[in-house]
Length: 72
Image (cartoon, rainbow, N blue to C red):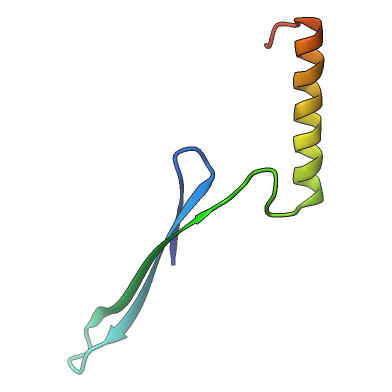
């Protein structure tokens, strides 16, 4: 299985290959499947550390918006 991230990090492309040997002993792709998984950053996966980072990030943005603080 080969996995690559999407352009904005919210999508994963997955390519699954099944390799089989021929009678002559060579390898060949006998089956493949291509699919995408879409993720919602705030909903999944449900990880307490990710949720805390989201909370901290939103709190930092809120404070900066209220104080007109420049973003470094």
